[in-house]
Image (cartoon, rainbow, N blue to C red; front, side):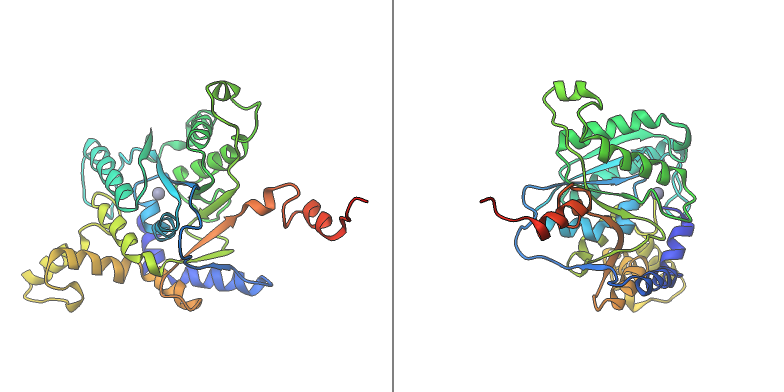
Length: 323
Ligand SMILES: [Zn+2]
């Protein structure tokens, strides 16, 4: 995530609303609203939370990931870069310090979100334009087959107005890997080790300006999203910005009631009020407390003969019993 992203989403969060409103008006049905489920309807399913940088998941879709984990998914984090460039919103550090701090913070972020473990692919930050895309696709295919991934979260490869090459290069490689992982002639040596070919057909694509067709109610997992953003001290607008502001105001002989009487309260309430302002505005539009927005691509459209496909719908309408 970049500074421009954060200020666009938080202080100019209405830009998201405007785009979403425009989309909803042009769509006959509007976005699907995915609400909290009771019980464990996703038990046995696996998700991969894929991000180029340490702060992307926390800022944009941690609430939805926490929701799916709560509803039974097993989850894994995959981070493409080593975040060595740091970030001008987080705390300053040298290149080496950035790598180590972000590595530790992503491990902690994975823990608080309930993910089983994280994988770091260790590409250089801001330098993914000229990596071997085939190498990255192959690594992702291996992980999807190994983890038996059903669902992925990643940057939308088709989103507009994206300035960071790490975002769109990773998005395109994930899109390709999801499809190729199901094909037996792609990297058959992986199958010889015992892995199975399996495509990933359930995709939650996030972006700065997503082409929205799904809204997820994250009201029940807002505290988890705050947990994830507190982990990002080296990078991102969460971390300890609240306690720093509280200390700065105290030096001036002032206080904000919002920031409470201790550092942890200050950090949490700062994130809730400012970092999640866009989620709150989006939720209000759909009668929800907090929400996240996605370009969602579901399995029904991909399955030949499945509901929603041309063949599946034809069979449902015209099939007759054998005599
Ligand atoms: Zn990013």
